[in-house]
Amino acid sequence: MSKQSNRGKEAKDDFFFGTPKFKESLKEALVDMNYLLTRGYSEKNALFTVGTRYKLASRQQKAVQGMSASNEQLRIRKAKEVVFETLENKTLVIDGFNILILLESTLSNGYIFKGQDTCYRDLSSVHGNYKTVSQTEKAIDLVVHFYNESKLQRLVWIFDKQVSNSGRIKAKIEAKASDHNLNWQVILEDNADQALVNSNQIVASSDGIVLDKAINWFNLTSYLIETKIDSKTIF
Image 1 (tube, one colour):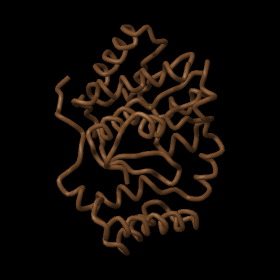
Image 2 (cartoon, one colour; image 1 turned 90 degrees about the vertical axis):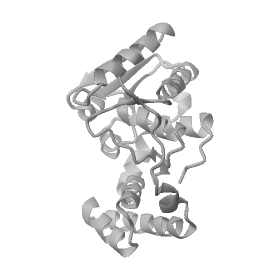
Image 3 (spheres, helix red, strand yellow; image 1 turned 45 degrees about the horizontal axis):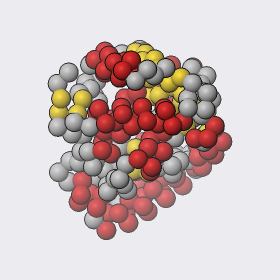
Image 4 (cartoon, helix red, strand yellow; image 1 turned 120 degrees about the horizontal axis):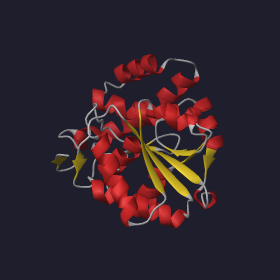
């Protein structure tokens, strides 16, 4: 599996997300997105309206889209969220690429965005092709430490089978589990989102569709980012 150096910031990210003027515009845009979504606007139409009003670049629009939700979505997600202290002896099913890439981005000092539902999201995308980065090993190790701390009974990673190198990351995680004697399982699925929802277990994901449909969920990335990673690029 070829390795790129990191999954960090793009050239204009400090300008787009670190400039005081843009920070204020993005916060206002997020309030408007929540209002429009709550009023029944489609995500596409709401984003177009907000992006046009605040003259947001496509990367800024993607950030606002990731952070936003309707009041009903926020209510549903909050009602199904479980806390760290209740995980002992439970099974947790992880949205593999979603969690891994977000942790890699955070460790790479890429900008991450705390949504209205308290989930963090980033601007990376595998586009059908996943490559490990310098921070991949540390990201997996963070999950190892979490697994031991939480006293989970079992942890299941689910990855999209169609993404290239999914078989290699599966083998890498299985080797880590074997080395540390962890009760882990790694599964490749044609439809990872559906498999997560159908698992009828507590899931870990920041994908809004998964959170809305899952039986319960745990905010794994927020737990790790806020307790284990010293990130300077949280929006």
